[in-house]
Image 1 (cartoon, helix red, strand yellow):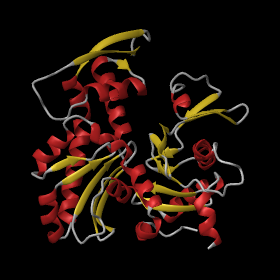
Image 2: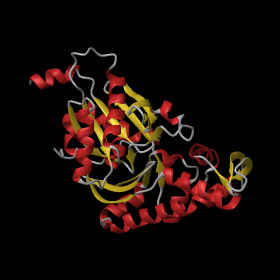
Image 3: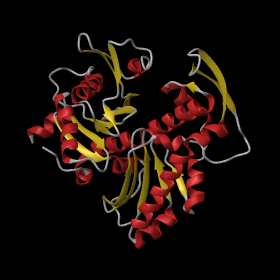
Image 4: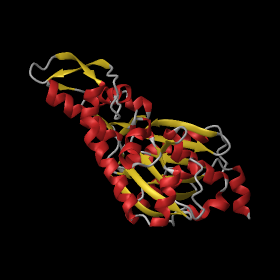
Length: 345
């Protein structure tokens, strides 16, 4: 009872701890943080110089004694100490307006489907060390399905594809649990690398990560159309070592990334084939829901629908699907607690 009284005053939060971006939901306030999952470290002093957007500005521009790193790789903590400091930074941003006597927040945090118990414990421990009072884990596709308001607790088939920066997760959910799933250790960052490799091989030009991402966002369209816009992009000539500018078209960007998009479609097909027939019938009727930043790729819903002959829908505001799901769990924790994973501790 005393704990319930304290929790009324705590600033409970939900976190989508992504490879490319971290989003934070504060109870009764909505989404209050949306920043890149990037940290800049001064190796001479071992101090954190910047987190989030400020650290992103340093990518590809920092001197040798500054390391700009992503502590989350494929949805998994790769550097515990740096991840802890990044999570603490985001939690402190939410709590800075509260009095110091307020209790530590309860935190609902989304994790990938196929993490090991050791990896789950790392997420819990890092979040507790960062200032959380209690940590609840939820699978990211389940959180995204809640955020999309799918009836996942009913005996009906719901298929959701969470297209993240480091992982892509395909899940069929029914009766509050994942029935079948496929997890791919690639996402938006892999598409960026595909574009970098394509430009390197075809134009002898080396692009930076941000330039490749901008090309993907502005020109990426995986469904063939008669339109073929282009834009100029600058990089380093691999022969002369000097700056050079080339023009890249939408068709060329599609050629660079289509192999991984085809792999995604085959993975969705494989997941459907593993699904019980009763649920498959409902999925073919209701369709597949796309969530995550990759769902914003132009034409991806049309291409999947054309290839698999299944209706495909993009959820509203796909970038925030997981964190909105964690927020909805926070708002109704008693009713939705059965959807949470058991603690690794």
